[in-house]
Image (tube, rainbow, N blue to C red; front, side, top):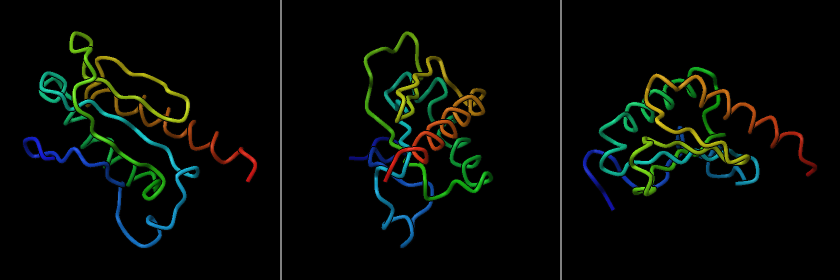
Length: 116
């Protein structure tokens, strides 16, 4: 399904053979609301800036960005949720990318500490 310029399909920061071989329990997922209000209020900017920062931090291939349909909390949008951990960012726009990035790094550290 496609809505505007954004695909609602989950996507990796970068594609490639290394990414396709990575197990889901080694990655972090970031859900970003792309419902009507959230997309307009900064969800799209957050996604774009987060993708760029993840590449700058050499975290490509370890983070799964998943734009979502409306999360039914438009009054506090846009929303971003980082898994594992479930840290929820409300009213998160492009200006909040560093906070979301910090949560992603913490989730990656949590993943690395798990026994294999």
